[in-house]
Length: 206
Image 1 (cartoon, one colour):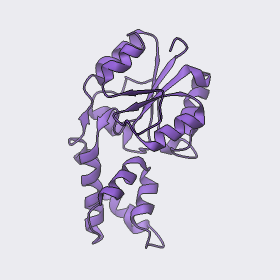
Image 2 (cartoon, one colour; image 1 turned 135 degrees about the horizontal axis):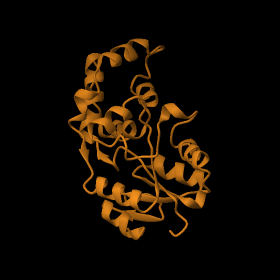
Image 3 (cartoon, helix red, strand yellow; image 1 turned 180 degrees about the vertical axis):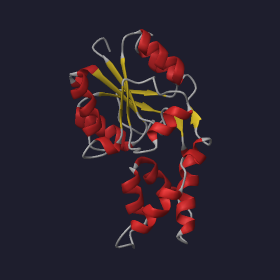
């Protein structure tokens, strides 16, 4: 840990509990097109996927998705943000990281909703970099987001610590060669398994 210079957070499942909001959002989308609500298996997948991958997964019968994306443009994601729950201790950890001189970043498969989320929770100035699926050629499980952060700050793989909660996060960390904390998911292969932000601060002696 003495080599770590940047701490990178996944959004959904790490910074926020977004299970309820994501389920509500995609169920409303499915209902509009007369499709049944998400099954548990579908929910697990769309919770990891980028929006594009989730839509393609949920509507495999469609030759084109223009009507789906058209309806989604009318859905105001801001109306769903109130169902998100910030992880206890997140702001305190981010403040401690800043004081400790660490680079703070986000690597998420969200796209155009990330800005609204940060604004709603007063986190706009809490990160030196925010990389979404829209900022790279390949979303997670590709390591592209982590590699982009490493390139931006001229970091080596051993200088970055990534915190995620899904198999996609595990695969992205492995692909980038970075240290990985599995957050609230003991089934993942990781360097550390934590369930609270304070444990991450403790690891870094903050």
